Image 1 (cartoon, rainbow, N blue to C red):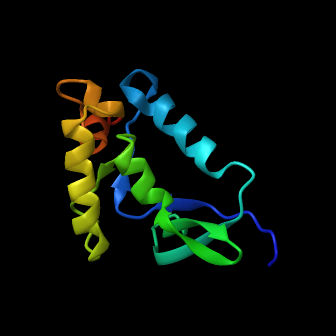
Image 2: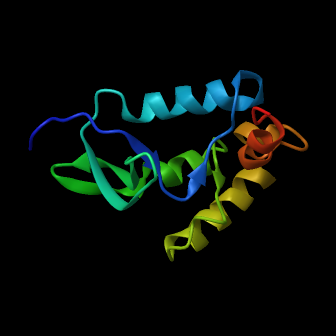
Amino acid sequence: AKKRRVKVRLYGVDAPEGGPNFGNASRNNLGKLIKGKKLLIRTMYKDQYQRSVAIVYLSQDGRPDELSINQRQVQSGMAWVYDHYCTSAVCNTWKLEEAMAQKQRLGLWSDAEPTPPWQWRRANARK
């Protein structure tokens, strides 16, 4: 397996924006999950910036780990399931896990009314 650097956007999930809105916590959690690890990337499609929009797995002896990084971010309350773009069958499982994270008030769900990143971006778009 060759090493290469690729820009990837996690398929089907959207992380909090900005530092105070759990953005830093989400980024740090993601870093802890993947830093120095071998990853398997399943590209679903390319976005307008030519990034792979992918489901990312830790590699276990060349095979994908059971839970994707995408799913782990949702489970820990570090990302939303991005309903508009999450259309794969796996999204149904992720939605259940998002609801469990919300019920347990994990991560961003510790805030009573966290602002979804798509709303934050619209409100903070450069005029």
